[in-house]
Image (cartoon, helix red, strand yellow):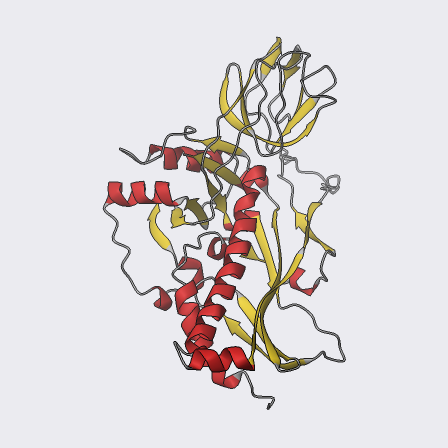
Length: 388
């Protein structure tokens, strides 16, 4: 076997990509790929700086001395490449010989490559959609598909972004397929076009409404809901921006990260990012933490009823810079390994580059399609959910 084993596979690989590119991939082309993270080893953290808001406005007063320094504390978020995954399949000579008497080994091998790439793309897309649990707030109504009669749900999601100060010049709304179908019907959208001629960041865009690129994903999460009922906060004043909500001893059940809650006298739907419960029911000393930028409405001293929002499909709106996807090819030892041949192929739809390797065994061959990646929402303030 020569070192050019994979050269003859190139037509099969790109035929496979044509199949994979038909999959509904909305998140991957809509997020940021951070090249600095690509240098990290698996599970090694890389810091991504977060610039704070500037609230130090001051009147200009002429003077012969320079005003005091205006230092800022630059915070950061961390991101890691958490997965290095191979999607393999293998053959022996007898299997190949048997297939050549039927449908043919080469055609089935091409389909296996397609399925491996499909699995890899879908897993990355699923990891990105799982970030729904750290979005800032939610618009829409649980159990009600948006866009039945108008696009008001979309403008409500955009309002969350704008109110949070998110840039919308490069923002997307990634819909589940049910909401996508409703929007296509409402707008009579015809998306029959040659996607291959578009830049990757614009592929899969249904339309553009109110500064948002509207996309679809087959991996949008339909959540479950926590069991907490009749719970209340403690009797305390709440301020705008507050993220930790102390609980009173009232009600039953609990919530978990990713649940959505509302408070009495506040119509905002807040996403829970973490919880602290000592037992199976709310008690004094327990707390719920919601996503940044926290509460949008100040309230006076009083207990507040907490309502858990029902299970819903969670379409996601966000600025590109809010979510980071780091991908690279899995590393090999400097001395090399037992691969007979290795090549890289890039999916023209998602932009993901895969490593394709072939390993020889005793009368057997193994193919691998491999990728390493990690995802992180580094700016929850620049995100929102649209429930359906």
